[in-house]
Amino acid sequence: MKTRYNNQFNKQTLLILLVLGLSFASCSSNTDSIQDFKVSTTFKFTHNWEGDPVTNSDFNDIKYTNQNGDMLSIERLRYVISNITFTDSQGEDLTFNTHYLIDVTENDGLSFNLSSLVPVGDYSNISFTFGLDNTYNAGNYPDLNAENFNVPDNLGGGYHYMQFDGKYLDENSDEQGFNYHAIRAVDDPGTNPTFPQDTFFTVNLGPISIDNVVEIEVKANLAQWFRSPNVWDLNVYNQMLMPNSSAQIMMYENGQNVFSLGFVTQ
Amino acid sequence: MRKAYFLVLILWTCLGCSNDDSGYEPTPQPLDIPKIFSDNIIPPVIPTGNKQTVEGVALGKRLFFDRILSADGTKSCASCHSPQSAFTDNSPTSVGVDGIAGTRNSMPLFNLAWNYSEHFAWDGKELSLERQAEEPVQNPVELHSNWDNVVQRLQAHPEYPELFRLAFETSTITKELTTKAIAQFERTLISANSKFDKYSLGQAMLTSQELNGLDIFLREDKGDCFHCHGNPNSPLWTDNDFHNNGLDSNFTDLGLGAVTGDPNDNGKFRSPSLRNLAYTAPYMHDGRFTTLDEVIDHYSEGLQDSSTIDPLMKQIDQGGVQLSPQEKADLKAFLLTLSDPLFLNNPDFQN
Image 1 (cartoon, rainbow over the protein chains, first blue to last red):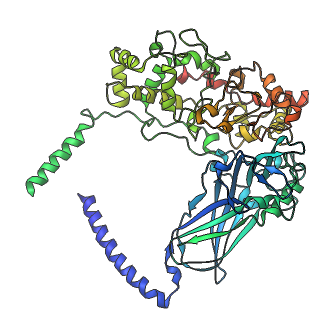
Image 2 (image 1 turned 90 degrees about the horizontal axis):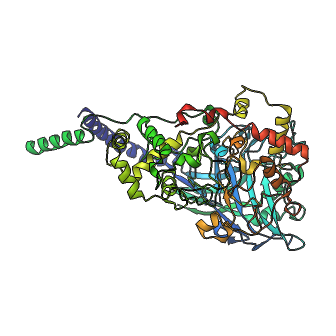
Image 3 (image 1 turned 90 degrees about the vertical axis):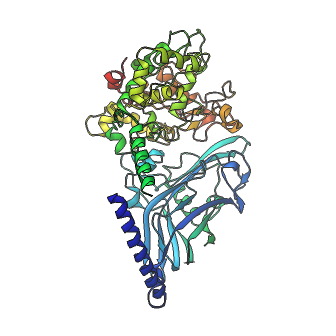
């Protein structure tokens, strides 16, 4: 009974506070920042090949042609993004220091809500990191470990940024496997690897005004991984690319134009 | 109003008592999670409808070793899942109560609660450990029982009704409660005390050969075993996922493909854990490889191409990753460090 009484009391108190809060909030739009309001934000990742939607139902079928003219299929695609950042008009950043595994193969993680609410307002940019920055990459993340997403220490350690596996038709029209695995570029893989340059990168989605609960679509054109500035020849670069720093740097360069802002629904 | 209030109060009191007149509840027995797991991977899967209890685990253990589950009382779960073989047996495929051999190698049983997708068996057809436990009991080439008969035998047994009451607060035995108990016991089968685990925890040293083998295991341009079989930070040593690892160019057993009906899944089987390889020969879903050397040879130069072979398989036209004899020996030495002799002799797991 005491608990019930407390609940009743709490409900009444909450109601009063809510009314008061709403009163203040409704006044504040004239005098204070609009950012007193916060809303739920969902990110939705969609995938396409030059505009044609790609889902896991399109996998295992050699039906895509890359810029080099190689015909290919997708059999496995998953990647990690991190540090989603909202930059407001004053240049202040709101960063979510966490990561998300987007697993197209399992149709898992393609849509997710941010862990806390985002203030409404005009943002000059929304961005995220493709992969994990070097500091983040040095951490130990049980969820990614459980997904077997690690990069072994003798390949530089940390985690894959992306696993993109499939088959292509070689010069003899025979099917061959490819493993377009993006990681932190590494030289001298082994017990003392070195790192020629960073290969995670920031994806800038551009300005967005948020005035309500919002869903932000991020589009990924998978053909871009094979297009520019490096026309990707699968006959040359197909497997064992993790210890190949040149290949990693080319992936980094080609990745710059993979992602773009899609629909913003609110 | 006052009468109604009293009625509600009485009803509330009665309901409060009705769960168990004696106030008895089974004793919770959470899994004892090894440090190497709690440090590195997410918690195990325990169904909300089947929490681990002391009494449930004890009942499950007794059922696991009891031949009462078989049609003619000659075999138990342990007949094909022996503790001394890391809960598999040492024949390519197991023979059931009628003397008929199945088509699949008996899978070793350990660390099952960390199979996050909960797709069990070689082909993933069992979607929980509880459901998996139903199948061998009624499979004609395994225990070949009828579940109704099994339940009748258990119900008529002098001790089981009381053991079920202690485990599940009812002495009315059902198939569902029987498989729940077996699943509880199976979830306690945790193996994480290998030489390599001790090495990871700073409690043991590896030889130079074992370290070389680890390097080969983790090198994408050498063994490239880690993409499917884990790494020191992913210490299950399996991804529990399904792959065609190039055993055949034509399939006599479709594996996952027979379950999903998708031809793209033909020839795919679940990656087994590499823990306890010292005790789990023969290897592969059909037990075709008698020794670990044959397994390594397969990945080195024995791959067979097919339309569903996993793109992670390397140099297929040459048969595989082309390890030298020394590299093979080193890799084998490393793989054997994943074996856990204490698991075999854990008194909690013996009949």
